[in-house]
Amino acid sequence: MSEASTTAAVQVTGVDKVFTAKRKPSVTALDSIDLTVAPGEFVSLIGPSGCGKSTLLRLIADLDTPSAGTLTVFGKTARQARIDQEYGIAFQQSGLLPWRTVAANIELPLELHGVNSAGRKKRSAELLALVGLGDFAESYPDQLSGGMQQRVAIARALAESPRLLLMDEPFGALDEMTRERMQTELVRITGETGAAVVFVTHSIPEAVFLSNRVVVMSPRPGRIRDILSITLPGTADRDEHLREDEAFFENVSRVRELLHGEAPVGIKPTAARGVENR
Amino acid sequence: MRASAGSLRTVLAPVILGVVALALWQLLVVAFDIKPFIVPGPLAIGTEFGDNISSVVAGALVTGGNALVGLVIGGVVGILFAVLAALARVVDELTAGLVAALAVVPIVALAPVLYTMFGAGAETARQLVAALAVFIPVYINTLRGLRQVRPVHRDLMHVYAASAWQTTRTVTVPGALPFIFTGLRIASSLAVISALIAEYFGGPVGGLGKSITSAASSSNYNLAWAYVLGAIIVGLVFYCVTLAIETFATRHYKPRT
Ligand SMILES: Nc1ncnc2c1ncn2[C@@H]1O[C@H](COP(=O)(O)OP(=O)(O)OP(=O)(O)O)[C@@H](O)[C@H]1O
Ligand SMILES: [Mg+2]
Image (tube, rainbow over the protein chains, first blue to last red):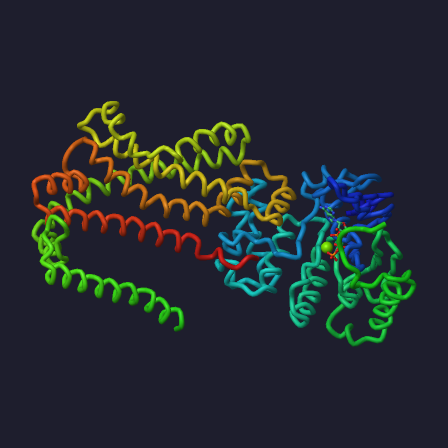
């Protein structure tokens, strides 16, 4: 632990990402991004649609490569970190395999990496208990609600006890009540596992409730406008009551001001995503 | 509740239509005194069918057996080639021409040639004709299905650093299952038709196809039609069984997660 905690979980230095397509203007999705995520730290990325949040996450996950700059995960290249399974990932769509049971879905990464059947069973039972789906091991994804499917996807992301979790709007498709419950559960789960998290969201209260730090981004080109430390109790001590707390609202307004306040004209959370004009 | 009422209606409607059509057919045959060599009435066919049930069943087993062998061989080979074509571009390019050629060849036309190749005493030629007819739709549908991997699943397998073979086995092929079954369902009818028609061109006696031709050539028209009825039933059984397997195998596929 002490040795690992000296290297950053994620270190992004001067990263650009330009998408080029034939007969279309190129899109600068990310422009000189610098970001460090400490081990065990919960960092949210927030910003209007199209500001490059997903792109940044995909670069960290080595699902895409930067056009410039360097990016390391636990001191390794993103590619090596992926091959070493240093992170778990959850997308906005749960991406469960519909032909596999819930337990078999959670066991998928273990199965691919050669864990024996007894070990897989034990681990999936632990994880199902962790996400509160102990009774659904043999159900199929189509028999679960959206929130339950998302919890399965999170359990799957945790299957190999990664030190880093990457999450792209995992609660985006859920209703407000389910969403708040899932946030509370995520705080508990990351508290128990001690994993660092990079969490993409559109919701200011969600970012504040979950995070140690909130990264506010702006579009065209995608840049980090500011990074805000949340002045709330440690994430492990956060619970439902915090949502009613004065300090919580203060932090929410600080993020909101950063998002809207100093914005140059024309930048709103509703700004259209897609092609850049200039 | 609603589903069972709906399925009752989907079963009942064609049954009623069928009964009405049969009654009308019988009425026309009697009213216009239509001769059996043109078309016998359903009652005559039914009686003949009942009287010769053992030889119809025996014929159905021969023809159905050939169709089944063809369906299994053609299906397995079609799926395997599609998987190879999805994995390796070279295979795809090599087979594309062959498949295009096979698709335009009327497969049963090969039957006489195959009889001389494998000997007129064996069922091999018929099974091969059925297998070839099955191969095409299974291959084409499977390949289409294998190319429909959802981006989120592709990303996931990349994240897990899964090998090409692992990805094929855990995501690509299971994801293509609905397409594979569509191919097999189309192919199941083709298998029966091909096995049946192939009998017209030679080979051992005993199958439904041979029985139809020999009954017709000896002017036993009612019996010929009874064998035709047997062939229709074999075709329906093949279709319904593949449909049932398909429905069961893809029961969890509908909502996208
Ligand atoms: N594969 C791609 N090819 C071309 N352009 C892309 C690609 N992926 C993203 N972009 C562009 O990069 C920019 C950032 O996209 P990204 O998906 O990262 O935004 P986002 O912040 O995640 O938005 P949202 O909140 O809507 O998910 C957008 O302008 C988008 O059109
Ligand atoms: Mg996004």
